[in-house]
Length: 326
Image (cartoon, helix red, strand yellow):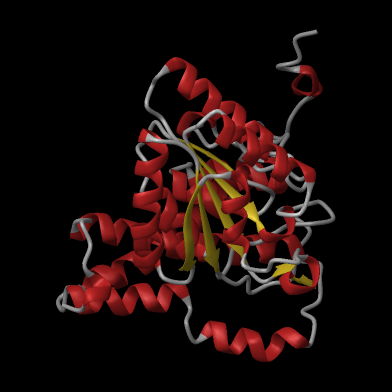
């Protein structure tokens, strides 16, 4: 066994993590297909394909009662946190049975049942909310941690500065995880940021910097996330920068700009699913049948989710004002 594949996770936990990664990829592929068929509406839909190891690796370091919040590339994070894929697909199609009753859709879905507090379309707008949830946890002394996913494009706005600064001032139990997929929409990080090594932002706020991690490698992300989550739970805020890559445009309606063609080839050779599969085979030479079962189970789950979503009712006029209290 190599040093790279030593882990505290059991075989069953690793197979489940791989299953989540495969499920995310298949879910996103199906969502793109449904969007192109105009069964999923909206101008934008942001896919997580290519970033699965970052989301699953980080969430796997949490307890079930810990909190997760993210931006609009949120379907994969919701799956990693344990949301029902059928209800997620129903939400994508705008149905009443969706996790947000069909009102959130692709960019705003949330699932309170698993403490996944949502995706937010306003860039960086969820960061103060993450600080608020962490303040509640600290005030209640419940021992829970907030894992907040941040896109690289959100690291230069005021929400980022204010939320991270307050989290350090108040020693809040929050892990800020920057998913650096190299582009904010179509702008390279080095063009938008005077300091392109985004993890170094931690220094300015006086919080623990857990550095850069290979966001294409589940094992690497999980190891660092474990340390950061434990630090946040006992001491205060922590920051991680995961270097990852999105295979689609900023949204599905975007074209892939030419600079990314060669770049993408290089990253796809280090596809997170391939890396995970290779390391599982290294750890467990007899695991091939289980991996094949994961693929078939994921395919079946997506088929069932689409069927459930398409057969679900659309929201009614009454649903428009449901949960409006004043």
